Length: 137
Image 1: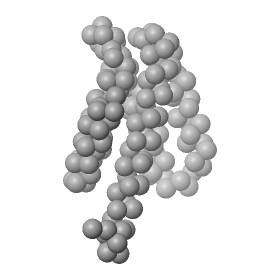
Image 2: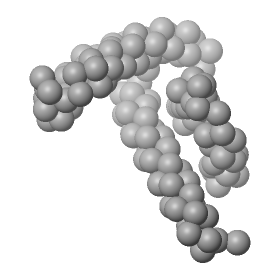
Image 3: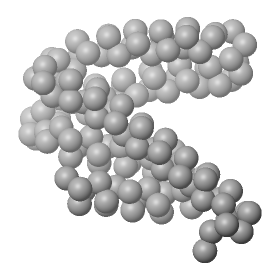
Image 4: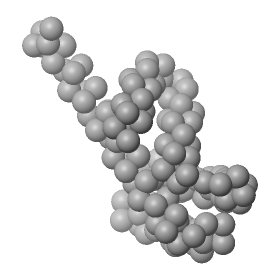
């Protein structure tokens, strides 16, 4: 497990070099991360990934709408409520493709991946600030 996380972190290290394709790279890393965590059989994967693609498109649409409105029409809480509604909707869809345990693992792993990305971004920001101040080797 530690070896796998190291590989993901190393991949994240190379991830943030080019800004144009960051979203695609993060998505590819997320898919690899979820694939490893869920340990899907070929049959499960065939049922799961089309549902996952629809799910991510709905979540993405909510976030893009919020970004375009610069938060003026919806509060952060309203956006989170919309996302929660999508998650609840897709919980049932995912349950048709996977066991309840794997559905729970999916949602937990998705959250864990987001936290991993946030930590990596925070570390990179801190390192940039330290480098600008000449406090790092």
